[in-house]
Image 1 (cartoon, one colour):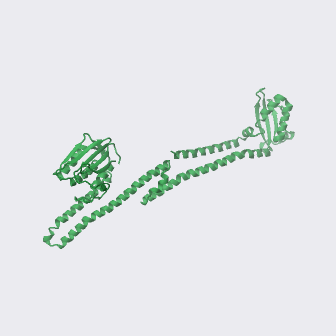
Image 2: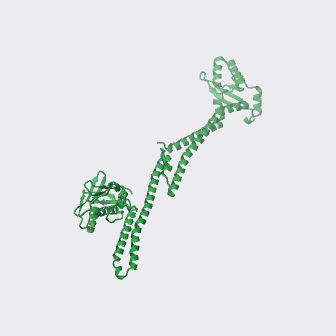
Image 3: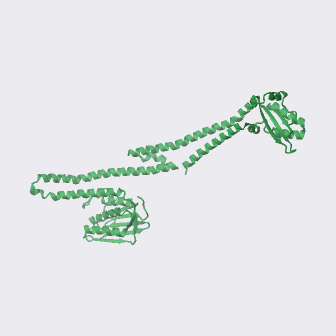
Length: 442
């Protein structure tokens, strides 16, 4: 996977290379004598050539070499031995020595004076070579020799500028898209397709965009769910309030004797309204922060839920089957609320004389808690909508607001699990909580 690390690394590496190149050029500029002696074609190999000519062919041949060199490069050369005496005549004109005597400072001389020593590998003698290079010839060579370093430097600067521009745009453009997506998310107008291209990148920004897409989709889903919940709550609250208004209006118009028959109706509508508000609050508490997870003993929890159910429906029979030593880390209040709703739902539809089956078992790394009744079940086309707030399958004669299964589903999701709703193959309806036994962070 491509990484921003390598982009930054390459940028810094090119910058270091550029600085190193400039340092080399500055070093050469500050040490021009050594640079000239090693790079100038007129003096680079002259000492070695002259020594070989002098030791093999004699002084005349060595003098001829210096004269030919002067005619070619316009450079004067003088060679001294270890005692400081001239080995040969050389090419220095007499007026040059007199001019240097009158002008001892280098900046007053019309030429550049360089000197170097060379030791013969054959005889072991050491010679001192003194060069006088006229400034016009030196300047002409420097212009030619410095042309390629500065050309290479200009190309390097151009390439580095283009690369830096590309690197900057490759970072700022995705960040601008992310900023626009954040703005859209804040305005609840986020579109997943706005970051689709960026999410396809195979670097950190692509991973960030993909994560942001998932977060944005989740947030938009939650916003839509909350809006739908508010609409459903408003709709559900209107019905009992309307009935209360009608009952109150009839009570006001009736005489004292007739008013007595309306009081039970008013009390019933108040109870329904109170039950609806209680279920809505239960649904809201599921999404609220319930603190840290804690160990939950499944057998004790199911026993408590069944005891409460038997008090409300003593005529119903509940069979419990729980594997020993079942426990998980979770929120006992949420689990109890979810199981209580599942069991109440089963009690509404279970016929008399049939036992409700409550089971808890381990399946690999999951805990399965199922509640089965022997009622009529639910038509297959309505199963997918069960668990949505305020949804009730058509044809249900029992009372309810459609929040029990929604609370159970939210509680299961809070534990990292799910709620499975299905018609039992042998008849009746089955609701199962599938919860991971491993620690889950909400």
